[in-house]
Image (tube, rainbow, N blue to C red):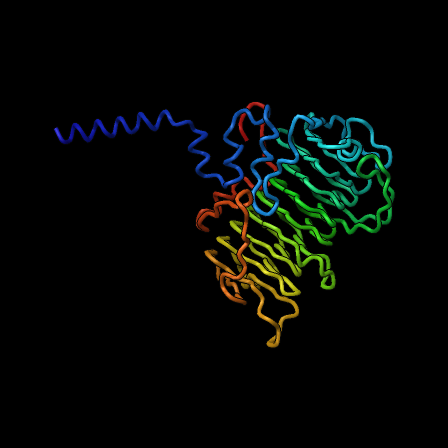
Length: 381
């Protein structure tokens, strides 16, 4: 009788499990952002739901949604920097006043003739198709706010000399020298960069500079690059002391050398990222930044430098930086030199910014879908 009851319980348990949707089981393996939208089979019909899924310092991107949003579809991969045609990406990013949500009609590769400025309240959403961006200067977010860049491959971005381009609200702008970054933020705020694949650019993959703040960089795949991510313009630009950036659920590597990230002056919360080696260092800084490295997974290179961190300008007389690790997982000989008082580099998120940081042993799963997603038109991502 006891054996029979035990068998019945097992059978019933299996039966109950069989009715749990597979999406719910899959969601348990996702990070806090992906759990918000990926399990839904109807995400294409409710694309703007994505704006409520952001976490970290960018907060929720609710200013990008509403009945007044213009839904714009890119149908033409060509690019005219001064007179952008209807249907091109540049037209959608610069010529429409107010909120715009940009999607793409089909797979396409866009070669930018000059840097592309992105207006405030713009969401570029590459889900469901394969969109590659390359060319001169690539993306520039200049004095803009409430910007989402999601689901793109951005690569082989080259330097561009001074030029004239179409800017926000359909006004031409003069630009200075552009170094060849995939994405550059200048005096921008509330920017969310999520699920992009970035690689092989002339200078760096992401620069957050000149007072930019309230930025979240999540679920991206950074690879094949010397200088990956710079947070802070230069040592003399003191406005970057107010910079706050969240770097979470990203994959770094293979073939990344340094700056994952490098931060000047400001604050970065670096959490649940996967590091597949480095040449010089993974996380570095100068000008007394504050960095909380939390529950990351560091795989040191098989030879060469095993130390995760790098500091420029610190000496025995320097004030200790708040530069510390909590819950990180170090493998293959990786090490993290901590400075400052433990617990003094808390992000102090508000309710809409806060998120669950997973145990470092689960980071490979939490970052398994980092980069531009391959979402077919008839299935989940």
